[in-house]
Length: 394
Image (cartoon, rainbow, N blue to C red):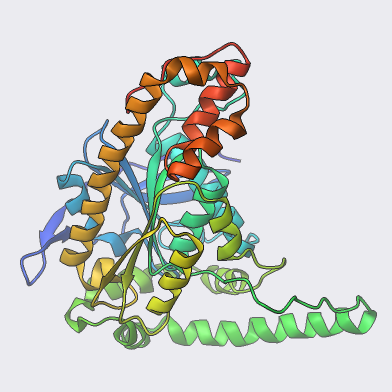
């Protein structure tokens, strides 16, 4: 097994202008940066100045970190430290033969990536956390995910609130809870046989479908169904999808990603756990993940901000100028609100120190706003262990 260290010499990140004069990342078939996680190679792109607020971009199904080619330079220029990561099984990351059910492995990957690469804990973070019962983490990050990456980002935000400042879903995918309860089949020999036959048949069908789907012309045809601006479908975008699919294990990963071994985790469940600001940046002309999904999410999470664009399934690449404007405007607003809550914490330091129940403290802030409740919990845990530290300005 490899240790969790950075591997391979990073490639220089080069920008170029597209035919419309818009700045974007110049494609390279070599990738950019690699990191070893649990013995598996993970690829990512990095841009921006160290010490700036961190934004982690997560691509959708079949895509890669390069799908954020227009957003990486724009976010870096706007004053953010940017990481665009390839999920395990996709892009330049390893085509690992693991269980991908419910994206649990991606949640683990993203959490580790934040802790070890994007926003590692400083010595002062570690010192502050000692004896508090709270793990040491670096400054929180904002997760921005498109499609499948949206689901992975939402799940990470729900399961690891201590690491996440906010979440942005860009035409986010994921199942909603069904009104009808699922009926589990009675475990019999026949059911086991039927399941095995079904799995074999499904694998065969998916393998044939994958071999056809990875052809360049087929990829362009599929993308043309979900892009409004067809001029965006250039050779580099197609190559960024074709090249990873040439990996010998890519078809097996395709099957594993589409083969669940557990009941689904729903968007409803994840939203019930989420306690951070949520942006719904939606291409309203998406025929796959329609705008009604965003409205349903907002009904379940009323504090969410919905921004609709005249764009398709991947607005970050389909309508990059509009998507960047909306995303950066929302991110800049988070800076202000974070300063506001830091001020509240400092002004009410004595009161918070007396409260020993993390849940009661968190509830006070959740009722007023979904922002920064995790910070209150962290401080209350510190108070309970007589290791309370002054809130750090972030």
